[in-house]
Image 1 (cartoon, rainbow, N blue to C red):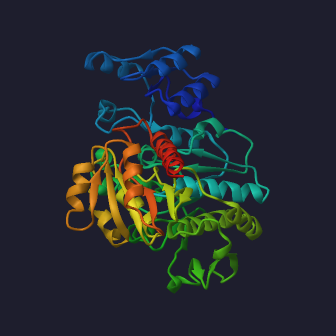
Image 2: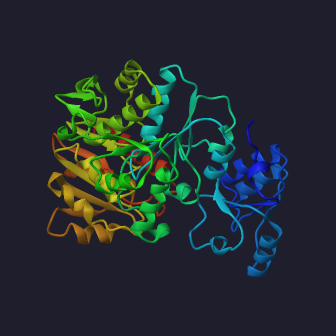
Image 3: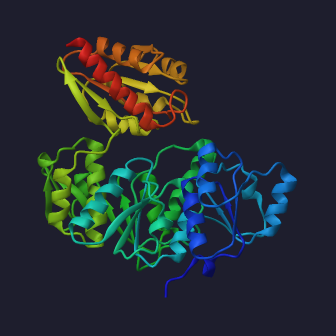
Length: 449
């Protein structure tokens, strides 16, 4: 018999934060006749509008006294992934605190495949879902990719393929996917997690509660991910780009992606996307999907048809033998380095609002850079890092950045927007930033013709 929220929560429930996850939780609790209260420290007009349409009152506590009075009235607490780690809710004693993913998992009887990592998780979630669907399974993508887990938790499905962020995993305790795929780890979100160890521990929650009947898919080439395998109870399957791991993992061999039994799955030259980071994503996707039961043929078909997602090293066009790529989703130095590995000579547009990370890892691929165009709040930091390493100039708008990059690029070069920072100085999201870059590129190419 399927559990309901009433079976796993103490009423009344406090929902902290009324963003996408909070709204989905509220709707599920209402459907299952669970009493709840909603608080939000800074409800925007759109949030108030949504709450009003749902007949819900959103309380904005005026002070600690009012906040404490609310806490005294509630049983369980469900916290949104966007709530900052310094929020007083995390100092609350005597209440179980969980996130939407933990709650959804407790009431769902659908097998869950979870995918996490600093980079690549949206792409891998998309590919795995497509591979399972092509193989005849009823599967949907949910979680950090867009649709809240709790919205599909009780649907009639074979699999829920869940993209999970470190914020979501931080708020899990018993979450136990049947397959948990950990792609990689590099410094990120240290303004929230405070230390790298805290960030790693949050990611580790994807495997922590698994047991011998579950499966962990691990990147053998990532030293931190590989080291955590020693601490888990579940079975382990690796993927690796290192031919030395042939026969021990899903791997690359003589221009092919092969499984641990040396069975060829797909020829690399047939893939529309085959930059180094693309192949890592492909290996992880194939390993996850095939271990879940997807057919080899379906995996091959999906990969040979996949042209990538928007804002992830997205090819925009070329002019005078210079190619333009939009990688606005790259908000960490590690993701920029991964993208640069696929190019020989690049004019890089980088910068934005740094989120507490060192940008020095960008120097790892400095030999590939012809010029750097710095944008946003991190411009001065980039100028300092690349001083005496590579020519760097600051632009004060995206149009100026594209114009300068086009002036510095030579035939055979690529112009790559791969910021390594968030967009929150000039833009409201990486999507808005990427769209503006695409617009500026179209304008630049049109101007040059």
